[in-house]
Amino acid sequence: MIDNKHIQSFIRVLDLGSFSKAAKSLNIAQPALSQHVQKLEAALGAKLLDRSSRGVTPTAAGREFSGRAREILSLVDSAERRFRAEEQELFGEVRLGLPGSVCPVLAPELLVRARKQFPEVNLIITELMSGDLADMLREGRMDAAILFNVEETEDFSSEPVLVERLHLIGAPDADLLKSGALTAREISNVPLVGTYPPHGLRLLLERWSSDCGIPLAFQFEADAPSVLVRLSAKGGCYSIVAKAAIAHEIKSNLLASAEISEPPIERTGCICISKRIPPDKARESLVKLVKSVVRELVANGQWPGAETIKP
Image 1 (cartoon, helix red, strand yellow):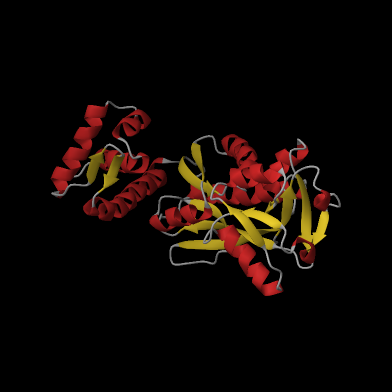
Image 2 (cartoon, helix red, strand yellow):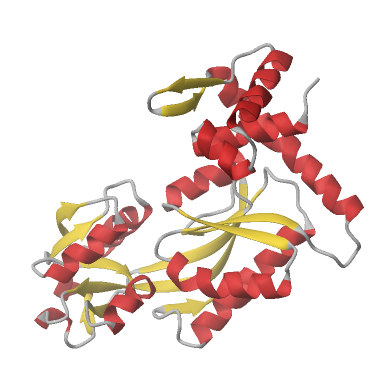
């Protein structure tokens, strides 16, 4: 017989890649956690996890079962929310994914507001690259996420909420940035540091470059957003990013920026909701709060370079 606790233990080990980390996260002894997984494997008649010096990885059976396991836990959680809670009460766990350029702007205010308005809802925010967040939505490992320039799929919905104009950033004393605004022609062949393709931002820049016939010169490439910022701050090269992501560095005079126009480089931020997880009131309420906080941050000038899209 399969026990939900055993499924929960398996999923936590799978997500954290370690029995010790999973045991600590679940606040149970590691031997007990190991027994949970062993009993689950015995009930299914299949080995689910492989241990090695590098950590824990799923077997082929483990990968196949993980999707069904998440569906089972999600259905159980949804049923508990429906029948245990009063009509007006919200509780449970909602997982929200944010890209690195969005997290520092949105997460602090959102967490405070969520705790105040929905004290029984545990909002878990995860910061990852957009591609990783999209994968987690597809797999049902994330309730919702903010992604850029995506359309609805069979795995998740997509609702545009704002448009961001990207900026050229560089050292605070860079002459090129002193005016605070540049035409697209002025950044032609400027030495740049950018992410590797097929990263979403890099693909956006390459499409923009191709469409308007303005060559972009990437001299350095890195998948870490912090490298783009730090290398640009050193001088000698620039990067193209969302201004909101580096607002603190600009305020601290560690970076300077200039908005690009004629034509601008824009991207559309969308709130995406997984279709692999059954709908519930807690998630619906948190998604509404995300939209509200986004609108307020833009209206108050706390999300520079962005404009909201009317619903």
